[in-house]
Structures are given as C-alpha cells and as structure tokens.
Length: 314
Image 1 (tube, rainbow, N blue to C red):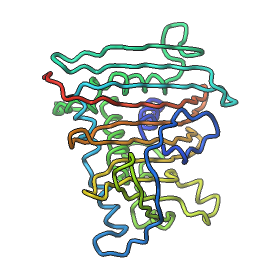
Image 2: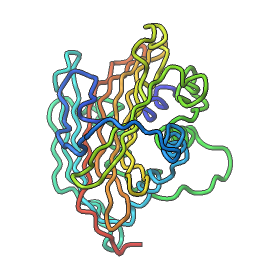
Image 3: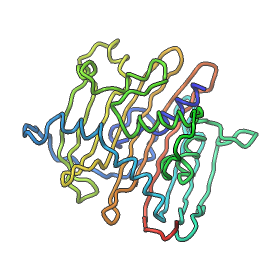
Image 4: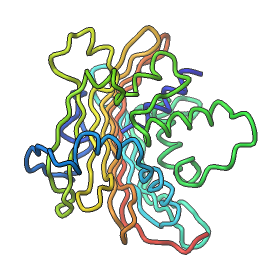
C-alpha cells in the first residue's frame, strides 16, 4: 500500500513556469506573475517569521477548494505521459463544465485521448494519471470540495492517505506521520531544518493587477552533496497578496531517493478572486517517480479553471 500512499501524496503537491527542473516539454505557458525587485524586509511587521507563521497557519487554500462546490465553472485538463527519453507517448485532453445550476452535474465538452493512455483492461497505464483523474476530473466527489464527514471510528487506508495529503498541501512545514523515512523531512521550519535553507523576498505583480510578495525558501547552494540529497523539499515558494496577506500561490520542488522509492516532482497551485472569493485557477505538475519492480512513471499536467459563476444548486 506504500505505493498508493506516495502516489496520492506526490500527485497533489504543488509549478512556476520558470522553475521547472525536469528537462522536457512543459504544457504550462500561462504567465501569471511578474517579479519587480528583490525586497529587503526589515520592518517589524514583515519578517521571515511573519511569512512562516502565515504559511503554517493558513486555512484559505483548503477553503478555496471546498468553495468550488458552490460554483459553475469550466475546467480544462491536459495530461501528458512520457517514455524513458522524455518523449511524449500519451495525451489526454478534457474540457469539462461543472454545472451547479440546480442539481450538480458534470458535462464533458471535449474528451480526447491519444497514444499510450490505457491498458488492455481499460485502466490507465500510469497510476499517477489514475489519481489525477480521480482528484481533478471528479473534484466534486473528492475530499477537497465537500466537507468531510465526521469520523465514525477507525479510518480506512484511503482516508488516512487523504489526511496525509491534506497536511502536505495545506499545511506545508508540518510533519507527515505514517510515511517511513519521509515524515519529518517535510518539517522544514524547525530549528534543525532551517540551517539548510535560504530565504528570499521579491515584490511582484500577479495577473497584471494584484501587488504581491513572493517568499522563497530554497536549499542553500553551498551544502555538501550528501546533505542536499538528504533534504527532500528543495524549494517552497509562496505568493502573498500585499493588500490582505492572503496566499494566492504555492509551489514546491521535491526530490528524494532511497531503496524504496525515487521521485522528482514539481507542482504549483494558483488562486484568483471571483467576487472577492478566492478559488483555484491553475494547477500544474511535472513528476517522475519510481519504485522497485514497477515501471517508472513520468507525467505532466496542466489544469485551468475559468468562468466561475455562483450556482443555485444545493
């Protein structure tokens, strides 16, 4: 079951276009942020601790996904899979209307598949793509949109994995319990882990009009190779709205290898306002992951949400 827990955790962790680390085709050509200058923040109101506290305590990312359930919107989903030479060997395109005008229904406006997408039994070739389909193409039935039901006892394995996923995405910097060799490596803001990271601030503009801070946590370049290899989160970038300190974007670059698994993943989530409500607008993923006796999985995704309109469904 470890295979499935890692697939779920890595699938949904969040890519700046210019931060792509895997040298291959990148489906994300949507430019959303322009950086103006480096900011040397010395004011008491804004310092490293201010940003870290906001990252750790933020709940608005989770609420933004839950709020999708109230809206009618269009989702465009592009999925690409790759061979060992990083050449595209499978393509999936979906344009979906999530219609919440009355009883919710999902309408496929476009549905296209090309290349090595499915096995003979009709299932996806890659488990990564299977998880993408479950999470993004069926968002209303996942734990991100509806409120979770109260626990009635011992959680199933899948419920446990979803809890780990929520911590990883919505509370970066906290430990992930129950994942061997990984749990504490996500806890990058502890006193012990901070010695491995640099912090940088930039001022910028998001979506042509929103003034933002870009807070970047990255592995120090002068660390030994052995130390760098032991640090799982290579970079964590958070975009803050200057006007209200709301988090509008989150990017992570993760890479780690041991005897049980090997992964290299970059992912990004971006939000925007619709009638002053923050909702997801872009999700991108580039990832390779491998584990013994199984085929290495290489894939990239681009998810765009647009035309949000408050529905009248219940």
